[in-house]
Length: 247
Image (cartoon, rainbow, N blue to C red; front, side):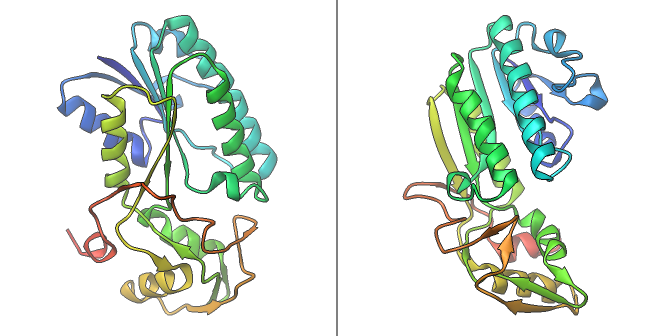
């Protein structure tokens, strides 16, 4: 098949492009750096010509509420319109587990707007919601740092390795649309504060984690359901210690 990966130069995009090429598919790794811009529409029609499947793993360059909403709405509308014109048969998007429970946060409202655009289009689709990536733990710690302390909620999380997200996307891409949402998570649950404490310790980082049940995550106060998947997620094979281990 010809498959277009929007955001093909990012963390997940690169892995997905490589997986699909190894399976023998013709893959276009589309991003502004390759001349494909979903905000301006530049290069979209050319990239999508003859494509059977489009996978959107692009993320907003800004997490500010208004900017994120404008990105996902504009990009989503332009991409879905171009797909309809090109006759694309399967639209796949990467989203976040718990998005519908986190709407107090502007970024999650933007992701929900993206999901709603997909659901209201006539293109068969699959949405993959993933839990937090191990690769983003450093960023989570940074956003919660004040001086030498990191203030975090003790809410449950079930983080996943980027490789496992890319593997799930690969299977979805070569499969039939489900016209619904599926979830992927890691094999272990942690308290968020304890997970970051372990992560910092493993990296000889002297910052101290402070537990606060009211600490906000992307603008949202968390509970144990906020960031954890439903009953039947796909479970990745990479646990925390394996991900931490030097390769």
